[in-house]
Amino acid sequence: MVLAMPSNRNVGRPKQFAEVKTERSALIAELASRYADLWHARGALARVTALLKKDSRDAVGVHSFWASALTSYGRSFGTGKLRSTKGTKILRELVAGHVQMHESIIWRRNQEVAHAVESAFDDAVVGAEIEVDDEVLAFTGGVGLRDLRVFAPPLADVEIIYRHVDVLHARLAGVIKRETATLAREIADASAEGKNVFGPDVSALFRAGAAQLSDALGMTLEVTTHDVSNEMRKSAGRKPTTVSPPAGRMPKSS
Image (cartoon, rainbow, N blue to C red; front, side, top):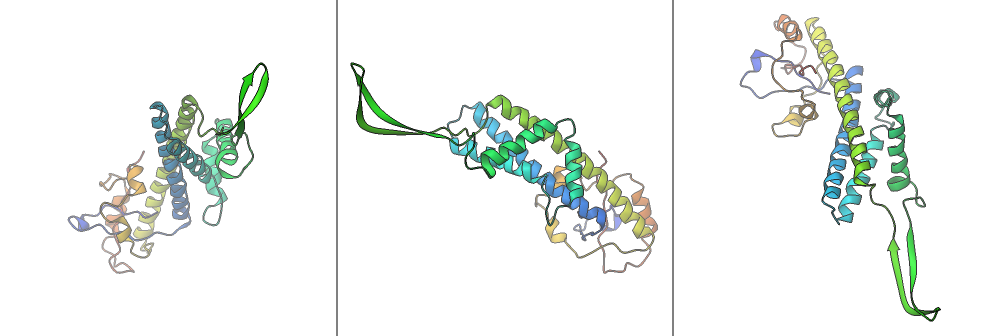
């Protein structure tokens, strides 16, 4: 996660960003990635809901958004090379009180769109066309095929799942904001002590118009009244250990 602090020296100049790599920033980056998965799941569920409300016959659209929602939701809880067990633990704590709903979504992900081939959601019927005359059945030569797979649950069920994801999404946003506020204080304290915590320049990744997770989280660039800004001013007279390190900013507190 890359942060910056408010500085009068940069008024009117393009904002600069330097990467920050600490144990806390690594956790924040991981949580931000999981947040993006939940954001995608939430958006896909909203589109499924809209299609079902219109009684849409767009089976491909319904199936695509539904499968995408289930996959992204499950991915947000995964562990791996870039995702720690600590991040997974935080997500599982956030679903406390809604474990049954969470497990039902994961079950549908596994059975409906991800792993299972033969399941309750995969079925088809083959029918032979017949004529009945005086209780005698005669085959007419026609064969009918019908796919019985369910592309999404009823609208009411989708709306319940959407509300679950929406609540989880908001809870995770709160955790990220709190961790980010703590990280900003740590950066300010380190700067006040003359320590350099700024890594490579990554300003290009935060160019104007680029979609930022910090925007979605409500973490804007306005100057805040946080005491961190005072700490930055105290150390403003020190010569930095890197060339023109970018000033930092603090997200709005939730």
